[in-house]
Length: 190
Image (tube, rainbow, N blue to C red):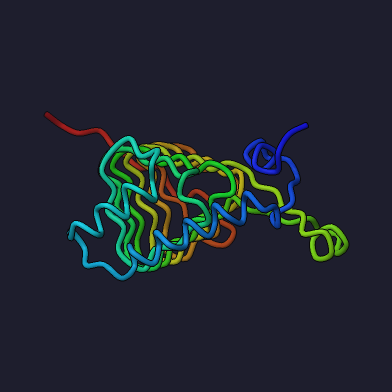
């Protein structure tokens, strides 16, 4: 039988009130307190980021306040930058490529909830779907990335966009719901 955490990471319905999950979220909150009260580039700030994002493949810069559920389900590449007030609900994996930048107030939600009241309210059932953001992506201020979405390499997501479906590589996409506005020529002349 799978644990609630195993179900959560598999994208299956799980009980968020599970003791192990509550404990992990509490530990995350303690680390977030340290991060959000520290000065950028201080030793405390750097240590909090290392603790919060143990699966980072590269350097991350998180401007306080930063919010997440676990941290351990966020995988970032080289040169990740999240500006002020970023929220990542990482009940499933959030994989972020190299050279990705988030403007202020970006929200990344892997979490979802059943439509029926009994499961959602009375039983506390949730689910989560993974999110993948490619390399060299810019996400504009206030954008929301919904569960299960993949964003391709070199793409720009416009401010205020609500990304409910996959977005291909090398495009500008914006709006609510988010849609491709135009292709971006990312050829670099030598």
